Length: 341
Ligand code: TXA
Ligand code: MG
Image (tube, rainbow, N blue to C red; front, side, top):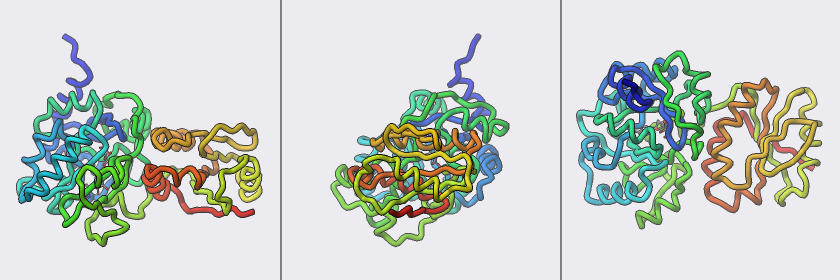
């Protein structure tokens, strides 16, 4: 009798073990949401402070109602609209929690975060887990999120009972988090689903944390670091036009960082140089986000002295999706370096 990977993962979770699960955003470090001892292991494995709340992952929208309480008709309608348009998908909803929801999940807050992820293996797994699973990103606290099984293996391989291999994550950065527990919908963490998209579906104003004052604690949205081990800086230039060629920029970088031997530069389009390692991601934010974390993981492993990222203003101003990428870069970089003429 052979057991398939999803069944194996479900059985291990039911035994109270930790399993790494694939989602469309990043890999998660999952525990059965009904087992407090198992959930406690997540915080130890990640080295994460216990007051940081976890996202509950469910198989479908029908399960959300058990987790919430005191939901107004308006909030119920907002949940339904967003769920029907974006779930399964890279969107997390924050709602007022039911009394039974334990503090270890919510970090003592009176709200709970819920998401239905879009990955066939994890949806099949969640269908075998009637109580849902809690899953933060499967990285050590303060590190960048994993988008490939190997990233989990390297960082948490000895802490998980099993890694459910679902290949490379297609979205590549963490879900958009929107709170429906405040007066107006409020984006707490930007992601590939933009405030404009949410606003269009809800037919109401959606605030972002930049526009709203909030006391809601959400570590992933504070100015804390989710960084590679290698020093990582974002390059800004005074040149706002699309660079005619990237060559002059590289010359300036090499002059500026002459003490560093092994330098990598992450940017948009193809370019060939022997003076440093040039990583061409894309002009397209969907593809760029898919590759950014895995590029950083790879460069980190390869022993670079310095990692740089250069995004062209003319490209990133075209598309709101760049905002969530800029948010993650802001958290991953030590500083912005202005290189002038
Ligand atoms: O894409 C994702 O959301 C991934 C995959 C695995 O689903 N998960 C993820 O989880 O990014 P994590 O724990 O790394 O980040 C979740 C963020 C944290 O910043 C946490 O503080 C916030 O969600 N959060 C969770 N519950 C919350 C709540 N009740 N109120 C405010 N923020 C909350
Ligand atoms: Mg995380």
